[in-house]
Image (tube, rainbow, N blue to C red; front, side, top):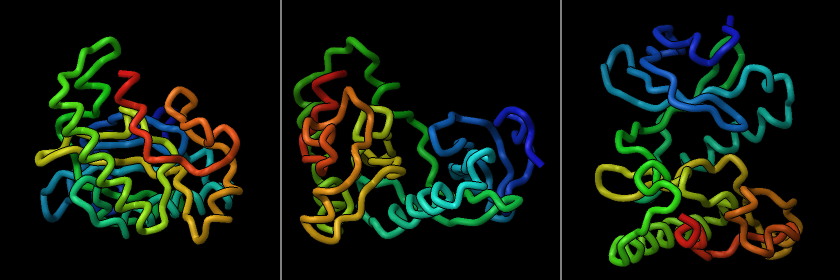
Length: 202
């Protein structure tokens, strides 16, 4: 049902979507550019890595990511469209963003103009504050997880987000994230702060 490489699904159909091209892979899934076969509209589709779907805990985490971004309705957070299964492997669909992520736009060593930094911080901080208000802590803020949308930045990849029901629940979360972008308290398993340290490391 699956090829040996994620590119083997290109030009095939996943649910209501035709796969146009393979974009990238992450720790949990493969991301594709797809077209809805009736609407003829372009979307992004994230399919869980097939080798992981037998792990009930990982499937639950993948579904949790879809549920998290579906309930966060903010102009600077990537919007989830739908979720379904392809041969028992879960996938979810989001809006498609043409312009790449912050790392694509600002490679290592790039000097970012101060007015751009201010604009980036305002938009990312607004998205994070909205998520925190809704008791969601992202925990993996980095340039690769910030997309350049048509009308502004879009925060994405809530795969290791923590749901905070109380201050106590935040304090016992296991350490998670990309080490070079983690706030110091994350290494101790504490909640991520609003520090936008990703911009300092471009």
